[in-house]
Image (cartoon, rainbow, N blue to C red; front, top):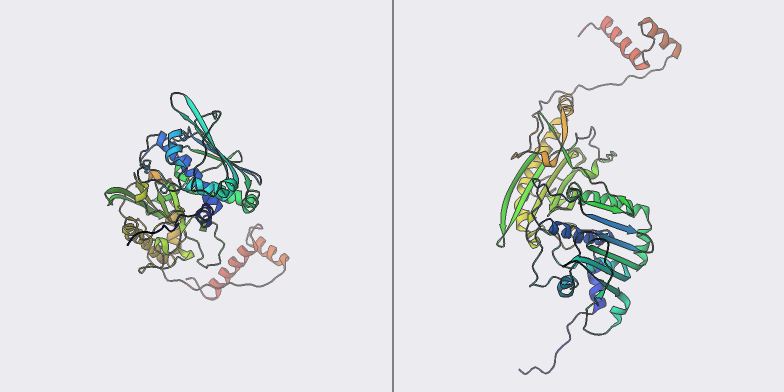
Length: 450
C-alpha cells in the first residue's frame, strides 16, 4: 500500500524531561554527578578494575559540593570533558551505540548528568577545562524554560568559550532551584543524610584517598571492617563469569562485623542496625546497602526473613566489569537487576554465608557465656586484609541447659544493711553484695553446700 503521510511519534522535550526526572531522588541525582567525577578520575589513573587487591591512589582528586537554598555547585579536578566529547555525545540523551564505554566506569546509560541538572533547577551552567596541548575550556549555559519553549526538533545546547578553571575538571552550577530542591538543600537533615550516604556508598574510593566535601567539610569514608579471631574468620572468594562475551569478576566477603545483640526483640534500639546485611558493589560503588530484603535473598528459596537476632552480620558482593552494561545495575544505580544472570549465580554462595551466621546465632542463645568469651577474642580487620577462604568460619557451640533464675527483692533500712556489711568486714559492700552474701550464708546453713 502506498504511504500517504507520516504520524508524528517524536517525544516532546517537556515529556522527556518529566519522565527522566520523575523516579529519581534528589540525593541520587547528586550521586550521579559524583559518579561522573569518579569515572573521570579513574580514567586518569588508567581505567583499571577496582578490586580488593588493587592499590590505586585517588588522593590527587577532589570533588567539592556546595549546597544552599539558592544554588547547587559541584566542581572537580578529574580531567574535564573535551570539546569533542561535549559536541558528539556527552550531552546526548542516552548513550549512542557507536560511542564506546569508559573502562570500568559506573555510568551505563549516558543520562545521569542531564537528569540531575534538570531535576534541580532551571538555570544551569556547565564549564569544563581539559588538557589538549595546554588548557582549553568551554561552557554550556542552559536556560531550561527557554529550551523547553522552543517548539522545534533541535535538542542541542550551545557550547561557548570560557575562562579556564584552576585545574582540568568540570564545574556545574545550578540556579533558580525548584521549590522542593531549595527546601531540601536548606535542610540540615538532608545534608547530614547526603553526607552519610556518600561516606558509605563511596567507601572504597574514599579509602583510596579520594576527597569529597560538602560545604567545605570533607566526608569521612566508612571503614568497612570484619572481626577475626581464633574461632571466627570471614569468607572471601572470587571468580569470573562470562556474560555476553565479556567477563565480570565477582568478589564476595561475609562474616561477623560485630557480636550479635543480647536481645533479639524487634523493638530493641540497636544503632548497628543500619550497617548489618548485604551490600552489592558495582565497579567500586555501593549500589545496595545493608540490605535485609528479598533483593539479596532474605525470605526467598528457604532463606528466612531477616530478624534482629542476625545483627552483626555483613556481606559484600562486588561485581567488576570493563563494560558497565554487564553489571547488574538498575538505571538509578540504587538497586540491582534481580533477573541478571551474574547476580542470580552469586546468590547461592550469599545464601550459604547467611545460613552459617543464622545457625551460629541460634546456637549462641544456648551457649551465651562461651560465645561471649570467644567473641571477646576477636580483632577488627579491614576488608582488604581478609584472606581467601571458601566459607565463613564460626565456632561450634555446645548448648548448655538454661537454669531458670529468680530475682529476690525486699526492703530493709539502710542502717541495718550498713551494719551487716560492716559485720562482713567490708563497709563498701553494695546493697546487692550484702543481699547475695546473706542469701549464700542462709542457704549454706539451712540447705547445705552444693
